[in-house]
Image (cartoon, rainbow, N blue to C red):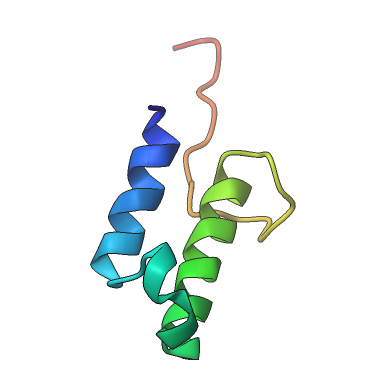
Length: 64
């Protein structure tokens, strides 16, 4: 499994989500999971998302 698959599974477990109980899940919990997934995909550059994903590093000058 890829690290993304492990991460998705961990997020689902933390929110107590699984395929067999999806119909009973709280809509806010589902929204939170979707937000986490979309943010992660945007951070990986495979989906449009928030322009600034939290990286404030700047490239160093070549003269160092």
